[in-house]
Image (cartoon, rainbow, N blue to C red):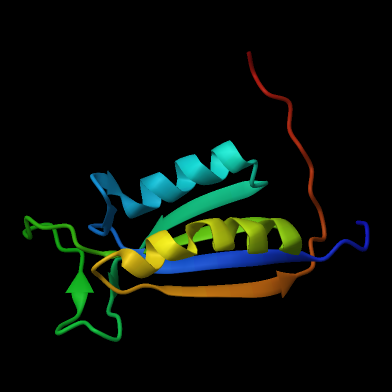
Length: 118
């Protein structure tokens, strides 16, 4: 790999968090794709809580609500992720629920681009 610094931007939120009428995680994935972020994955947790939670959220087949933890991970060059974060920072600060955002420098050992099927 080259010596360009890469990072992992992680956004911890809830599956029910919204920006406007859009689910937060869907909004961020679509926006990241438009902005050319190298890769994004959304993970839905089966159990968790946040600093402002009054109880632990968990996934159980008999529950009707699906308010679960979600982690949105984005990988790209550090400077690209910094610029992306700056572009969404005000939106994230304005959502009524809490979230946690971290960024970590990473070493990419292999980045193999596959053949797209047409």
